[in-house]
Amino acid sequence: MSEVDEVKQKIDIVEVIGQHVKLTKSGRNFRALCPFHSEKAPSFYVFPERQSWHCFAACNTGGDVFSFIMKQQGIEFGEALRTLAEQTGVTLPSRVRPDARKDERERLHQVNEAAATYFHDQLLNSPGATKAREYLLGRGFTAETVAAFQLGYGPDRWEALKQHLAERGYSEKELVDAGLLVESDDDKTRDRFRNRLMFPIHDARGRTTGFGARVLDDSLPKYTNSPQTLVFDKSGTLYAVHLAAPAIRKQDRAILVEGYMDVITAHQNDFRNVIASMGTSVTERQVTTLKRLTRNITPALDADAAGKEAMLRCVDYENTLDTEVQVMLLPGGRDPDDVIRQDPDVWKDLIENAVPVLDYALDMTTAGLDTSTARDQARVIREFLPILARMKDIVRRDHYIRELEIRTGTRYNVIEAALKDHMAASRPGKAVRKSNAKPTAPLLPSPIEEECLSLLLQHPELKDESEELLSDYFQNSQNREIYIAWQQSADIELLKERLDPSMWEQVDALVSRSLVPGRLEQKRSRLVLRLKKEHLREVKTLEAAALEEARTGGTDIDVTQLSQEGIEANIQLQEVFRQEARANRSARDESGRVP
Ligand SMILES: [Zn+2]
Image 1: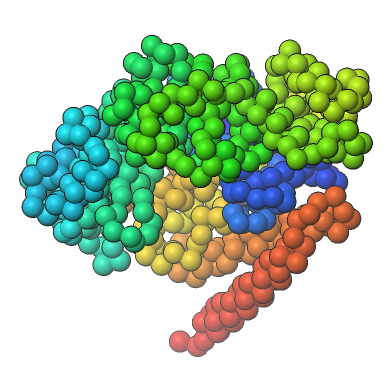
Image 2: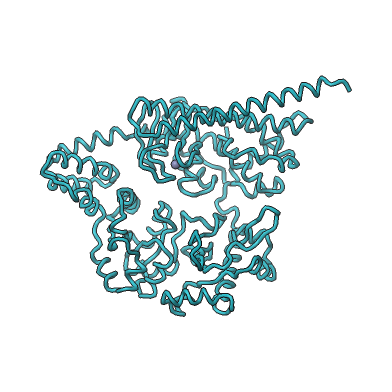
């Protein structure tokens, strides 16, 4: 048994996902609000029997425990494998080195660094950058600020950066790998960032990992980023953390905002402990990075827009940091950039008046309600229970039960009982399976997946016509990873380089597997159809299970939409059957034909 299978066998997907998402039991399965898109009604399901998960709404995707961890933490397969191996006590062979691609990473840092220097020089000196310079002047940025943040300008030409870096010895492939060039349909490459104001992004050690870019007119999207690369991962990045680190350490506090401009304005006004998340929510990885600098993280929230979701996230930060999170509340609808530029003292006051997030959540929950009535008392408690349940620190939890008691007049033991009920209803199964319990999930031996991969790996000439094979058709994450890497690699050596060493064994097995020779094309399309069929069947089965629960009540999942998806899967299945029948007919005709 491979290490991957061993980890899979020892782990329970319900427990693993339950550590990150609040799961509620629903029939034989569990459901939750999808962690990968924002929604009000739960359409994210975990199926213990299949050891799989699926989001039936916006994401419309799913997979096994590895793909969940990869997606949730924005990490690669190898890292997910190591994380789960650690939890299950499976020892991975030492050939699994985390920095197997160290040289490649270093080179990408250099490319990005060279690009940042070029963009910065363009901003300062190029006649084409007049508009960019005027824009920054209009925002009131000083020359020192522009230099400190190494702001830049991407020229309005197709190959300006490409040519410049080619002259300095960087290959086209390196530029593509760094996300600086995009490949167009005709196999040509061109600069990704054209006529853009450039914000270089660094890691905590000050290495350039990627870029944020802003348009200079009203076109949308206003901001874009580098794509995910070997060194750039949005979910693990904090803008300006390398500049802010000394101030964060000194003041023992980090202020968290959302935009590049917010950070730059704050620093220019000498508020140097300000950093930005790369999106609206802060990930566990970002909190972990920050934890090395301080335990006091103060998110700046828009008082009007801060919802319950933001509160729940703050509770998660508290759990990770093991300390109270205070939030600063910006006057309705205004962003930090705005507030600071108008009056830096107001910003100072807002920091001083930061409140513990749970106090604020409690205020929000009780606002506008009449807590002398039984109805509103029940409502406050119901609203606040999920927040309480999420808290790991029992002392603080106790404090807030008391607070709730005072505010609603409901007795402590009544609230406590309600909380216990709430937690029992949402608690998933036990942690790691007991060793003598037999696994409920098949180990996902996927003969068709493997046969198909073997064929593709052994016959690179089949690559050009394989675009109808979607990576989603592979249910086994390891196979899925190998397939994705194969699409991007010219040969097996390069393929292996792209993959974590824990998967090399599987690649070798696939490459050395003996296949019946001949009729490659037919074999390929037959296997692709079968994978597609399996995939559609799987989706249908999962949908049927979710639909069944939706009908028997207990979930507000959109039954109409789900049925619609089921119908579409059916239509696609019919099409697969037709294609298979056609393929069989032509195979018969061919073999029956008299030469
Ligand atoms: Zn989703």
